[in-house]
Image (cartoon, rainbow, N blue to C red; front, side, top):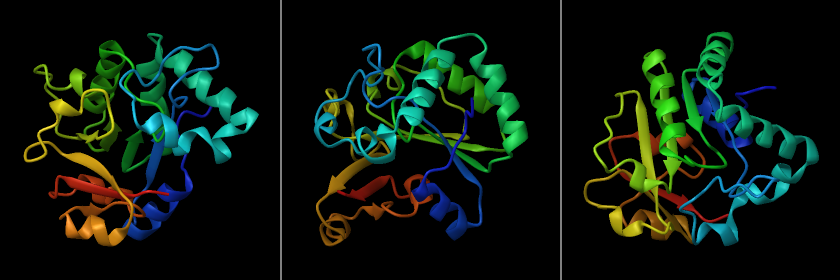
Length: 199
């Protein structure tokens, strides 16, 4: 089972930034067994890009679910660390589909980031509640709170790095957000207002 992959956006991002940006994916919203992977999803359930296109191929669905099952085990951290040594990424996007489904699972990624300090890890998440209860993150783990969750009220837009979806690039720019629609690494710049154009 391949743990780290690279979608089309991250291939483009890698070329543009001369970096090696890989991603780790889980099933979008629910597994084939009905287990919830995105516990705080709300508005995004209706328009989630990870529930259509290539994500619907049987072999892709199987891989996503196999990764989910592995992520629940004690073998996840050592296997991910071994994969990182082999693949040699500069950045890892955690979840181009799926989310942090429990604090225990989140802690595994915190440990992976601590084990690989030369790599930048980043993730968009609607599991905001897991992060605002005093959890200390390593400096190489960057989190972007995604609007459209059940707990948007926990986002302080003047303090937290957060993502908002816009209908056009013009509206995004007028609101003072950085456009990360095509270059994913723009999501982790000093500008904490991350904009994405709906597609």
